[in-house]
Amino acid sequence: MKLEQTACQIRINIINMLEKSQSGHPGGSLSLAEILTALYFKEMNIDPSNPKWEDRDRFVLSKGHGAPVLYAALAERGFFPKKELDNLRKVDSILQGHPDMKGTPGVDMTTGSLGQGLSAANGMALAGKIDKKDYRVYSVIGDGECQEGLIWEAAMFASHYKLDNLTVFLDYNGLQIDGTNKDVMNIEPIDEKFRAFGWNVLKIDGHSIEEIIKAIDKAKKTRGEPTIIIAKTSKGKGISFMENQVGWHGKAPCAEEACKALEELRGRL
Amino acid sequence: MTKMIATRDAYGEALKELGGMNKGVVVLDADLSGSTKTGVFQKEYPNRFFNVGIAEQNLIGTAAGLATAGKIPFASTFAMFATGRAFEIIRNSVCYPNLNVKIAATHAGLTVGEDGATHQALEDISIMRSLPNMVVLNPADAVEAKQCVLKAAEYRGPVYIRLGRSGVPVIFDESYKFEIGKAIELKGGSDVTIIATGIMVAKALLAGEDLAKENISARVINMSTIKPIDQDIIIKAARETKGIITVEEHSIIGGLGSAVAEVVVENYPTKVVRIGTMDTFGESGNGDDLLEKYGLTVENIVEKAKQIV
Image 1: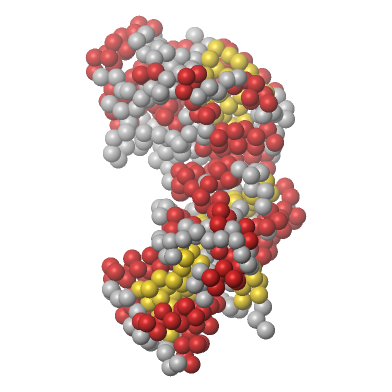
Image 2 (image 1 turned 90 degrees about the vertical axis):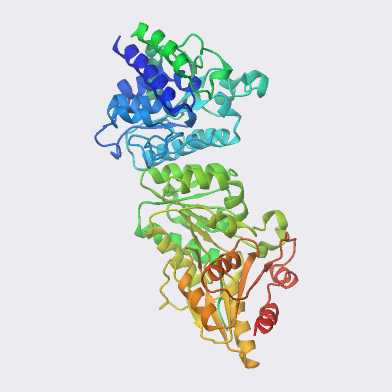
């Protein structure tokens, strides 16, 4: 199916990007390829030629270090020339290490400091309610990110103000920097926590485009509650030696590693 | 008898007026709407008022999101929590992306009074002015406070407005036109300059009068914009008088005094004496008693001014 191929291409872009920059976060970018594909190539009502279109759907990558997957999706979608991907994290680049709404066409909110993106996404959704607009707001948060208190302030707010135009994905890959979530700071039962905070909770395979699309559909039909889609994912998905490895959180692949990775990915294209 | 009006009260009234003029203005509070006076806006425009509860980081983050969608959010709580608790959110979600969020924080300084040290923001000017893109305003009276609010709404970008709990003398009349970045010489003088901000401006004027009785000609300047600071008026004062006293209801570290000293040292070095809290926390007490105890008095200004002359 075409969308699966796009997700694969996005993974290829991520590896290429990180090989050039020699800096960035492969693990938590690769885990989101299907989700970003479903959003940017199927679901979201956006216009690459008009990135600031008032009535557009919005996307906030609250786990901002996943920037490479966002940039890959934006480039493929035509928000900026693909060659910009070669300049990730370099001085004067339009692609900053973490999403920069001022410098990068298509980025709806500046993020990077965990917890803040969800708060901002709430603000966007709230604005939509105030103005009685139809646009949807999507956000991706990390499981480690759920350790930030601000996530819970935002969760309370979204439920209290019935932001049913907000749909959040939790990149549920179980890993963070110092180890697994379980070992570092347990977040379970995360589904019950969000339910207790008044959210509609869905659970899916985060690498199944079909399940992602079905879940978004359910979220759209849910009234009076924001939805969180707990997407079970693998950090480093798509590359055998990166999958489910803590070490690949923030380490860019060297030339040799990138080569191996691309071989695997291209084999699947 | 001079009218005494708290700048937070002026804020409440200004917001109400602003709400009528500009439909894009929305107001957020963190469970303190009775104290910050955002409740005045809420009564008039309940659909544009949002309480986030006791969650100051979310207060600012949500305001940032609203700003991206074209709203003009005014976010309020006590200065301590607005600038302290939410500092990093102000930095990374408001200032770095240069979003149009206005942070109007009340109960700044010692005069929050009996609540004591944990609630007395003495560092807010210092940390807010350290942020790129942030405009820092500290109005001296109710007239100026109202204009700060209206100007802040017109201005494109982050603004921090510092407001107080207690009534302060009205200094300006309706003919006054506040401009961001423009300090005002309230009283001419040639011996010494007193640059004051916020509630200390009224005291600076009284000090000026007392000094005049002793034949000391004190220039008194109201510096209501700490950032961008009015360099010209400072350099002129350094050049034309024997020295400068700065007065603020804030620590001597990093606030008005430091900002003025920075300008002086780089352009026209002269003596600058800072009056403020002396790198100490406050304590519980009646506002006026605290100002007295911590040296934020007319007498102290007069004494320091005499030392320069």
